Length: 138
Length: 138
DNA sequence: TTTTCTGCAAAGGTTTTGCACCAAT
DNA sequence: ATTGGTGCAAAACCTTTGCAGAAAA
Image (cartoon, rainbow over all chains, first blue to last red; front, top):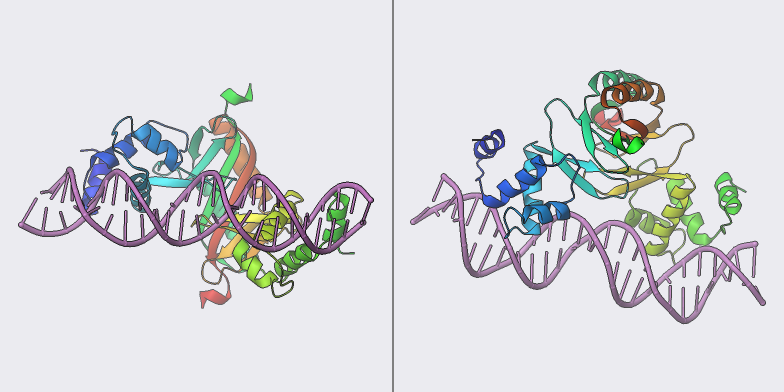
């Protein structure tokens, strides 16, 4: 049984065809996909898949921290698998291919400084980088 | 004439009552406001203000870099005045009060490292911090 | 007077909800 | 057999667009 399936079972959830389809689509991409795109690709795996179920599945997987949501400047959201220990996305502005990176060391330095400057206690952060991937630089 | 008015005139735009109302609301808050909230507060200044005009004004002010948009975890957007030289928002999760901070030095270090690791060329970044402001820590 | 701006209404797009049926355990 | 999940339809939102009238320059 795959790790994500164990995770769902432990949470008291069932393993279903729609959930398998969504996970399969997400495992096959390194571009953050929007719910509509996940639907279209997922229907090639499970033709009865509906958009509502995609939303509900993404919400579940996000709660379980198996999937994370990235923000786009236009306000839409894309979803990619969560990579353990790598929490931030770097997204190509041309082909939208995303890689994740760990920025914890530099972030800790920045956060400590901002906490000292502002008096705020920082609990969470949202960091995304945008640029050109190696292929699109040519 | 206020600086923001000069900025609009230079861009070939007119100074109107709805635009004054939106700017006044934004100058009186340190919490990022959603368009609907800007409408409600702006109507106390200019009762004819409509939601469509709020959106159009925010788009204009954002284009002119007088106002910046912040992302919330729930997917909504808030708007606050742009502070020169301070590009990132730190938002209190209890009272939503926001301060801006400059993180350029640490960000440059992080970006240089990520560029070296991934081969991407990084052009832009989205960074927001969330936590507790001094008042809400008690 | 000329051009831009505004407000309304309507459309467009994304996300959520209600409900009856279906499927996993 | 039970409980949770699914899909459809419709609702609820947020945001944009078309257009005629109003206001700034």
